[in-house]
Length: 235
Image: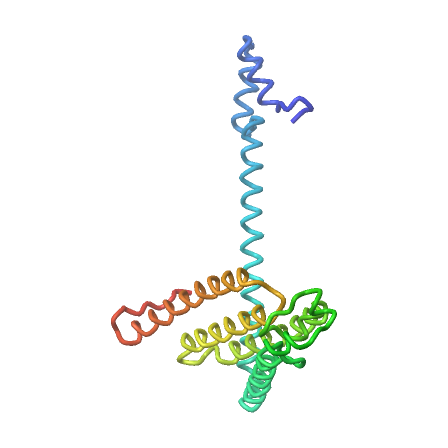
């Protein structure tokens, strides 16, 4: 393709349209035999190639995520029963401690009586409300505490899900974990320096996830009871 965007096939077509001779027709036949393309055909093929490459990259990324999950599953399955039990105990302990840390933060909560009787600079600036964590009077400290606590909580839940992936009642377990996650998120937002509007948004989102998990759990029960025929996945 030249700087004007024409290929030899395009130039030959222009010559034939303006009245070519026998040699031009012979060259045209040779171009057809070797599969010479026009400029628009090259552009179409290039766009199709780009779409194919993008789809291949997307499939490769999803395949990498699936391979990572399979490697984790393989690591768990190859470990001994004692190791799995020890990991489960540690994961449950971390989940319990981090969950309790949100329900009972180190500094406690503001009460209505204290809010009326005490005058603190940070409280006067922000207008602390009853039920809000005292630590929330310093938003930076509260944010750091919440982030590290959430990392430990969600990492422990992921470990529990991984260790119980072969559990027969895994659908119900997912539902229980999701419900506990919802209460954790709502507790963080309710005790922190936020407004009710954000709580409603979280409740709606967690409600949708809860509904999706409940549907999956119901479908699993119906398949177990034989109401819905069970179909195996083809590999």
